Length: 376
Length: 262
Image (cartoon, rainbow over all chains, first blue to last red):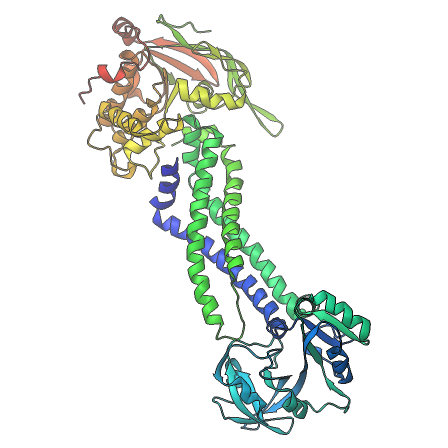
């Protein structure tokens, strides 16, 4: 049985290559589409997820990260006086204009943080020093956006909101879901670049680290009791809200989600068709097996073994192809993620799809016209 | 009913076998009221024009197709009312099939094709391989055991198919035009082999054929027309075969008795 299953697959190498190609294509399609979805989803909330903060205080009714609104600095001092708060840092997110050295203008998101304090800092710095963001005009940008921002090395200059900016560092892989790259600088510099309208409302977020012995939920309750007109989220909550906003309430997110689901549907259809065709190519042999006394269970086992072989080999090749695509996406405009959990799910999905497709043809095999085996 | 010719034992007994197909509002009668006794130790030829019901009858006798009406006994067991899941057991234990198109598995060698038939019967291990090789030796293919079907001639393929049909040591062999696709020499080899399987090891061999070259080898010739058993001819072989055949357990001494000189 095992021999027949394997030989049936490998004997006709061209047919097997066609079968594998179909499975690999389907799996890569699904991986890329869901990888894009994951990449987009992750990108929307990456500043929150890497902030190392336990809690975020945001202006009341601000639903997601990219639309931070300024609020009073006094809240910050109230936060500091709240039991369970170990560290609180002011943080700014605001859109601004970036004037390139050649005169061109780009929209950017300025992120103001406190270098060296650990909360809300950019990550994956590959050139320069984080502390240099404290310099009067020091900014850190991602190397993905060098061309877009018209800079290529540390020391290159530009203007943000008519204030000088000098690149002091480059990060790798910090993308913006919007078309506006993130520009990290010290909180103090960011005030110059974003020029808050009110002297009092001078921060968009407060990032909080809770004290040892306190849970984020406990401190969240304490803050809610003391501070009003703001919303207080755990990092997970704020991250989820931001992702949800972009993925499910905007056209962009829905387009990515729809494409991912379409990828799944097309992938399943391709695998089903491929396995079905491969099985039907051997229909006469299955008919002969039945004629010589094989039970349906025997046929099922042969088919399932073939399906599992196809799935595992297809999965292996698909992983190789997908890794190349994922690697090349790291330097491209759209991030494709393939975490371990996705790899495991894809293996099970591949096996499940192949077996399910084989079962569709099993139904056909169990109803083979007996006359078939008697015809030449 | 057409009466059977004398024999040691009736292994297939059919009474009133009919098969109807429905095509829209029309009922097609593929087989009508066929009464038949098939005996061990005989090569029975089923003849008739295309559409006369030969293959349908062979399918019913082989428990691949169910009759619409009538009764069928194989080796004394009434298989007419057996549940569907019991039929593979009957096919495994009682029947060997030889097909016109050989129906070998192209991905398996000759020996593996024969071994597969034993594998279907739940047999595993080295003994299976040894038995498969012994069967191939007996059909004269000792030097082609490792060959794939694509590398065998038509006659060799059919002999592999016969070896496969014998894998379960069945008392009944059903062959559907086994010589139709073969040249005269290969055809003669195959029909002689089938005849010897009937005469020397006491199997009941039923063979559908259009091939006039094989008529002289049959012990009985049954003619089907329009789904009915129209007439039966006894051949000169009948007497000779009956005299030559000494009843033994089907297949029990097949390997020892069969001298093949092609």
